[in-house]
Image 1 (cartoon, rainbow, N blue to C red):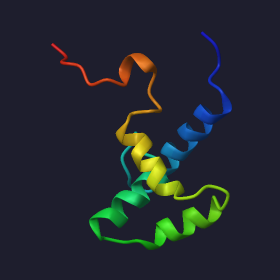
Image 2: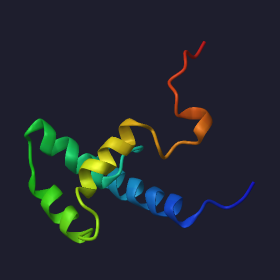
Image 3: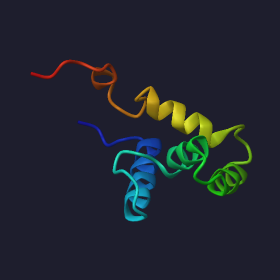
Length: 84
């Protein structure tokens, strides 16, 4: 087994920070921010995070879509399967 690449480590740190701030354990701050904007509860975190990632257009939206596609999971776990 090889050590995860830097992106996976950053995602893990992001998910830990999100969890410590009251979010779900398997969600990034960016995805959570977009989810809150989408449901209308608050939009200011998207503005802040998207400006921090100024070189990426729609960072929070893309993070949310990535979570919905389960892109951070290993390929074998990305498809939803019936577990028995």
